[in-house]
Amino acid sequence: MKKHLIAAAVASMGLAATSAYALPPTTTPDYIIYVGSGSAQANAHYWAATQLLSNVDSYTDSSTCAESGTYRILFGTTKAAYNDGKGTTIPSGKNVLYMVRFGGGTFPNSIAAVANAAALVYPASLTGSTACGGAPHATYQLPSGFATTTQIPDFGTSDEEVALFNNSLNVVGSYSAGPGGTQIFHPGTTLAASAVANLSQVPLYENILGMAVTNVVYNGTTSFPHPKTNFTKPELAAILSGSITNWNQLFADDGTVMPNQAMILEDRTPGSGTKAGITQALLLSPTSPNGGLTPYNENLTGGGPVGTRPSSACSSSNPSAFTDLNNGSNTVVFQGLQADNTNGCLAIGILGAEFPPEVQGGGYQLVKINGADPYSRITSGGHVYATYANEINGTYDIFVSNSFNYRTKSINGGGYLGDHTAHSVFINIFMSELGNGNLPGGVSGQFPLGVTGTLLDPSVSNFGDCVTTGTHFGNSLAPLQLFADATFGAAPACNDQLQ
Image 1: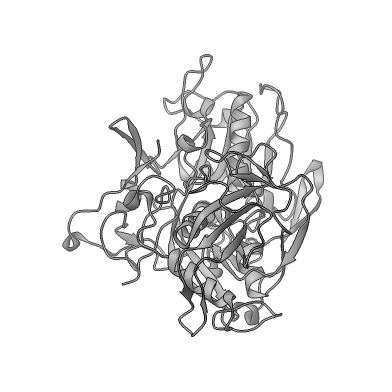
Image 2: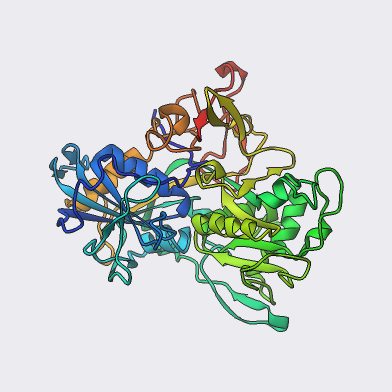
């Protein structure tokens, strides 16, 4: 039976090379692979690349050498000869430049661009890159103002299957000025049936989604020692739809009214897979037959994005009003929460659980939803581990089905599986590696030996460690269904080292 991962909490840790500076940036690649993705899969791509390539270096466009909020750029050498199962082989020892674009959201990168064989923007080359030093950062930094190129992605990885995305509120749209300083959202164009037919999809894993708050919310402060660690689904729905705009509309865990401070929502842009999954889970929108709530930043008569992230200490008058910030990736969200926390701001954001604060420098925490924690921690032998018992037993049920998307025929000259070129080989081997049952950190060890926070889906994996007992059967709109009952034995364990 095929094994697949669940990118539940893929931590965006520093991607140190297995042997730093193995290939200088001036090295000419033998092959360049272009990929479209959601930000949730960034570290899964890194792990897969290190299984197939040796001496992998990571490149970033960040001025501080932190990991990029837009790309995962990896350069290494094939460990062995690989084939596509259809007669095409590439040899061992070839230099491969693997470029993954995730900034801007899942739909434009890994669904629309792959289905339509439409070009995305990538760095044109690595020339001029300078050394960063490796862990906990990338090994190389792209030059300021680096040249770009537009290329058709060979394949894509998405947080959800295509069906969840292909409606007007989950694709990329546009904005115009609305009443009272708001903005009116204009839904984008969905994929035509002919474009959907261009895609082949393979289910990979379940991706855990959540909401995160700054530490000043989660832990409380000296002046307001009343933590709020738990939110009900109705509370979160009200925040996301814009009907709760100030923290004083909420109670802390002990029943104390929260402080008078306008809410900062670190949101995601329409087209984001994390956004689409949270919207479906908490707002039942836009696919509920009975009608769901509309996200504030997708309001058709006037909503967000509004306001700017405060650059000074927050107070009852700063920010002056509800602030809804469109962010292009999970990385930008947690970095925004960290900046908010530094300024003492009460802020909340949409975030995939693959970004635990222990490996990102802290400043925020993922909250309990209806009393269920997306991951609990244990300490053993001086290390901190995440456990995913609530996902495994179904108590925490906000996770969605990830998908590997690729073409099987020629469209606009883009590569496809079976085209008798290296494109076909790389589609085949990365599809296989991203479905490898050894990928989870709870199976293979702390990143980069395994991917932090990932679990396996019982409908595509053998029952064992890090396998959930419930599944959506590759359909994020379906209810969580029990797959592994008591006859399978005790629920599996999954202890995933964070520190």
